[in-house]
Length: 127
Image (tube, rainbow, N blue to C red; front, side, top):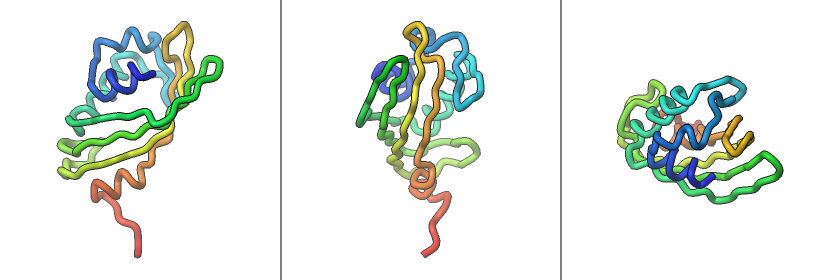
């Protein structure tokens, strides 16, 4: 899991995709190919070139691994239609991974998007 989160996702080591994922990965209920996984990673790597991750907690049972992760970075390029803000973010997320044959076969996560978007200045809460 640390290889996936820290080296593939945060360091952008795309060459690890075949080692980490099956041919097709189910992401939030939708099948994605390895190339699509790389494309998704590139979006985050481009938007936050200084992306850093820390796994705060990891629990494994059977074929499942759950991680609680802290991700930080500076928003330097478009992120899903949100233009660069130059602002720092610190986002927390919980991810559930299901493994088959030693590779990630399914991935689902809940990201604290409200806090992320507040930090980027995209939304504000009423006072």
